[in-house]
Length: 381
RNA sequence: GCACAGUCUUACACAAAG
Image (cartoon, rainbow, N blue to C red; front, side, top):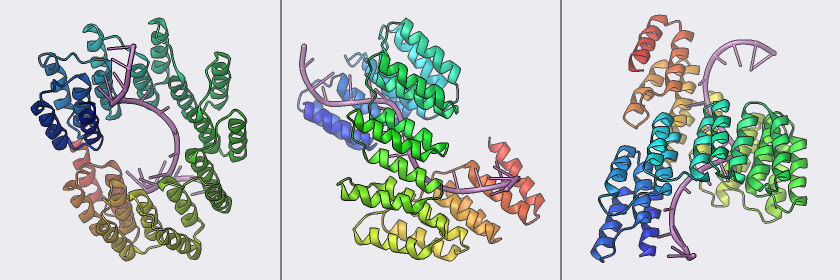
């Protein structure tokens, strides 16, 4: 039965609700009563399939099905609401949960604090954190990572560092997430060398740098214009047995493209393809962007066709990048065609898409067209 | 009491300035 729950959860994680229900059917057929875990997995599947309303419905039905939703069930939905920009609804559900006698734990609190930090509502995040302490819920290392991340997003690296010291004083051991967060903060403000020192500190404290740590450093080098050092670091970690991932490739491709050394870039792409690496959508987007910036929109189109052929679904980034490429060549009408086609692909009303077109029309001095589009955009919300 | 479910860190697009 647990195996079936696990299976159901796996399908939920890839948002295949149809398969979830199939497994649920099997569970029932075999005479097992579905439990809270079963339903929570199903709830997760529904959430990830963008059917949060259905998930909420299931939540209310669970009682009648003889299974009380617990804090995990609620958290699954609350977190999804938060991540889809519906924090108000999430907080409503949080209150609702407490009314139903389900006690919040550190995980729901973390989810909400994270959402507040991401929404740049630092003050609300802190007061929620305080409430959590008052309620006797102990923060954990995840909580502190969320807060540190929030601080550095506010540009408060010093405070973030102080919080780190405080944590250590409290006897909480920083994990690699915390170190990675701090390293990224340092890189973002251009202090790549300090970030590298942080990696040393991390290792003296008994944590090995993982691929995320190295990706952060490589990204730091690339963004500060030292792609060579990033490439060296990559070879170094491979030599030490660490597997690069798609983030690594994106970071390096981005760096290489910005050097405009096409020979080296092409060489690297061939090398990766030769190794049998499958590019993901971001990898393609970066190459696409480079082609567009070089005014090679025809090649860009071919690249998009290629990615589709390889089974990689273009994202809204793909389309807006392409649109911007066309606009840069003065082909605003072609850009508009792409924009229109986006609607049928689930990317309706993309703001960047509007911006690109508006910019394109303005550059061509077609202010009237731009105004029409602008009104259309406002009208659609 | 048991564990099959929930939260955190890294990559890509558009303006201006440079």
